[in-house]
Image (cartoon, rainbow, N blue to C red):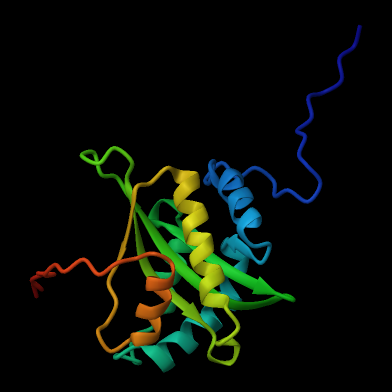
Length: 181
C-alpha cells in the first residue's frame, strides 16, 4: 500500500506556522478575540511600520534626529526582542504598541514592559489607543504574565488618562539610572 505524503493542515485564513514565532498563533487568536483589527507585526509590515515610526519620531520624540526605524524593526525581525502589536484598519496601519517580555522568577508569571504606544495623529480620538490597550491585556492573559509596567512622561496627560482607564496605577517609585559613555 502506498502512503500519500504528509500534509500540513491549517485553518482557513490562519497564518502559516513560523518556527521563529512558535507561540504567535496562540497570541494572535487572543488578539483577534479582543479586536479583529489587532495583530502582531511581521517583516512584510516593515515599509508601513517605517512610515509610522518616522511620524512618531517627528511628532512625539525629543530627539527627532534619531532614526526610529532600526529599533522598531529589531522588534519585528527578531521575535525574542519583543512583541510588536499593530492596529490595522481598512488596510492602513494606524497604531502600534511595542511590548517586551521579561522573566521574573520571584513573581512566578513574568512581566510585560510597554515600551511605546502610538496612534497616528490623524486617527486619534477614535478609541484606537484603547483598542491597543485591550490587545496588551489580551496578550498578558495569553502569556500568563502578572505585571505590566511602563514609563510615561509627566507632561503626557493623555497617555496617563488612557493607562488609568485600563487599570494601571502610578507606582510612586523612583527610577534611577546611570548613563555610561
